Image (cartoon, rainbow, N blue to C red; front, side, top):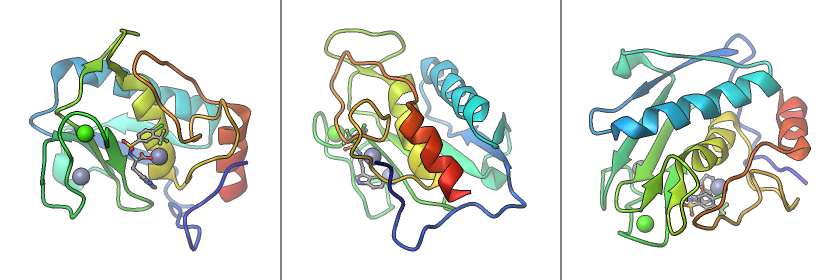
Length: 160
Ligand code: TQI
Ligand code: CA
Ligand code: ZN
Ligand code: ZN
């Protein structure tokens, strides 16, 4: 079953349209998979998303970092943590630049779009789910691709 963060943080009702922007050092090949993940969430929730070039004022900021990058949650090189995102309404979504990322499903690499679906779930207020098959279920293996599950969609509908 889906779950929320302590205190159920969420985006205000007045904010169903969220903008996102990519940081300077974003791999060019990550943009399409992240955009696809936003489109999937938009198709299944009341949220709409659009990309902006105005990084400073974007609601959601997607970027790649390695090691200590100044937010108190340092990345750890290859392995371990792959990415992280913060609960509403922070909006930061960071990929660990030291991981093997892939646009398609590639053995030994992490699927950018699947990771984005999971981290956007956190950005919108979902914590981890106990339902195997949910995008918020806490397992993720290289070479694996997943989509949204009914449990993820029910979670967002319950929160908003
Ligand atoms: N990154 C963790 C994650 O996204 C970071 C994290 C742990 C976190 N607890 C959190 C972020 C609570 C927000 C709220 O879950 S990770 C998984 C999973 C990771 C882990 O790189 O370890 C997935 C990334 F769920 F399998 F553990 C993607 Cl799917
Ligand atoms: Ca890592
Ligand atoms: Zn970070
Ligand atoms: Zn997670």
